Image (tube, rainbow, N blue to C red):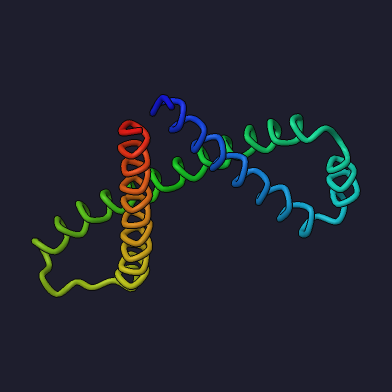
Length: 130
């Protein structure tokens, strides 16, 4: 099995799962779309998985943009805080608590991504040996 094909398959599976999850969350939360979404479940499964993959890709891109925005804001805040700290060494802000929680969340997500990458690499290595 081609490692690139496996990577693409795993990525599409992730996106389909992400899209299906957002589909079901939307179904539960939005009563106006509930009937429409439930009717979609009776359509062709291949068409539904393609729709979920597209939705998952959009969700993935939105999540990446969100994380990038947060990181840029945090970097800007760190630069601003370091400039402020050098001029006023006793300055503290309430946003420090939020940013440390945010840093913990980002660290956990980064570790989870690293774990997934390691698992993917192991799969690729085991498939290349076979």
